[in-house]
Image 1 (tube, each protein chain N blue to C red):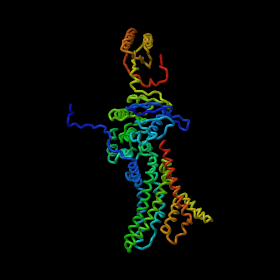
Image 2: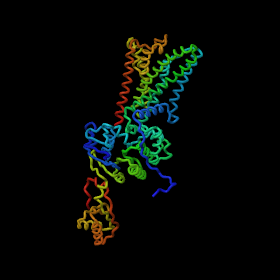
Image 3: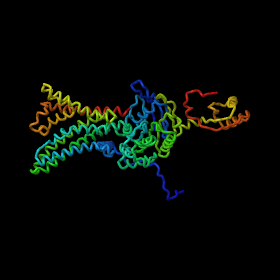
Amino acid sequence: MTLIATQSLTKTYGGRVTALADLTVTVAPGIVGLVGANGAGKSTFIKIMLGLIAPTSGTVRVLDLDPTTDPAAVRARVGYMPEHDALPPDLSAAELVTHLGRMSGLPATVARERASEALRHVGLYEERYRQVGGYSTGMKQRVKLAQALVHDPDLLLLDEPTNGLDPAGRDAMLALIQRIGTEFGISVLVCSHLLGEVERICDTLVAIDGGRLLRADHISAMTSATDVLAVEVSEGTDQLAARLAELRLPVRREGRLLLVELADDDTYDLILRAVADLELPLHRLDQRRHRVAELFAQREPSHV
Amino acid sequence: MSEPSGVIHDIGYQRYTGPRLGRRHVFGALYLHGLRTAFGFGRSAKAKIFPWLVVGILVVVAAGVTAVRAQAGVVIMTYAQFPDVMSWLVIFFVAVVAPELVSRDLHSGVLPLYFSRPLPRGDYVLAKLAALFTALWLLLGAPQLLMFLGAAFSRDDGMKGVAEELGDVLPGMLYAGLWAVVFGAIGLLIASLTGKRAFAAGGIVAVFLMTTPIVGTLSIMPSQTVNELALLASPPTLVQGVGVWTLGDLLVPPGTEDTVRIGDFGPLYAVVLVAVVAGAVALLLARYRKVATS
């Protein structure tokens, strides 16, 4: 089953501003990261998936449904957390989420129960009876997430869920999203302009820029083949880099570190021998996963 | 391996497999929510003050009229005249309630949360409209019912008298419905243009009251035709015009015919009224087509 599938999806505003250009991507269920700079077309993509705006051309299917022809069916199975402030300040979280649950078609008593449950899952307990206006940004983000969960969707569309949160709040929100994606059995599409955040939690990564697809792949496919060894020596970094280059090991410099692509176990031996021959004080040698950011980087690797 | 007993488990997330109600139920829920909001139910005490102040004044007036009629036998105002006399209060009620229904949602940005749900955006508008219509109709109709009950119990000619009163009060209530539809549609349209409640309230009062001088000016022009068309220029007098045409002496008791003259233009008044309401609703729907995609 595919979660989201688009074919040459294009959206232009007024024939001039291009928000999405020929976007063709297929995503499997799981936690999906949608990354791109501000204005890359992420929000437009979400609105098309919700059937709120029609694409200029191309097709899109969400949960095997077509949001352009049957938006109600899509929206019934999707929960949406918008990027901006969306909460009336003078209602309590419990009232608001209950009301929105009813708007999704839940019977009155069920809506009340599920609202409490959803708020509990996002970590709001007694506070839920207080007016939202007095909440912190982190609590408001949680309420927004709870209202997207209240009707038990099959897919959550989260637009910049960590916006405005402090580092601890970001970590908590990401952990929560990961729990929803794994334990709750709900697929999640997380939009972010911060690659470093989403790569930690998602299974699939879709990167767009200027409305065009940069890359879409399973995150393991992006990282597994490209594990690197990070070597740090207290002195003689240049010497070691030169020696490793002689040994035909692809080596890159990153600050005080040398990054060497890990071909097989012999790579360890080669590096250790080189360090020993040069009698350099080895500080550390460890394997690390490629940062996904490097995969998207357009610039040349910075050789020494 | 069995789990140890006597431990409280976190049951975790529960999927929902129960019924999901259709469009009609969702519409009904939103309508009731709007109606409750109009009278401040489920809201802070502050939100209840104004609607209930207006309700209180109207009920007191109706009770007073009923008492005077029962004691002194003097009819201060007919059922149908009640909405006319109370029009100022109704305008202020609309100016407070319409922004409460739509401007608040615009301001808080909650609309994406509605429009990302199955509810079609037209339903949102129509449910809010229906809620405001009902609130206004109750506001004007309930005091008439009070007057009717008072009159029915104080008449001494039995069932015949009650039937007569009923014949008077039912058109009065329909007339209240006319007020509700016109004021509701125009008020909600103006309120939907801004997220600032104060601006919306000011705009509504302006549209309803600032147009009154135009009526005044037109009705003293030397042309009789212009005089008879003057009431078209302002929403409250437009409703009155239709009332005069349809209700006749229920609204304009013998001896007071000079105050509102519409000549033979009654049907025109009705057509304009329908056009105004239809236009306001169409503009509202168009307005939300834009809001939903932005």
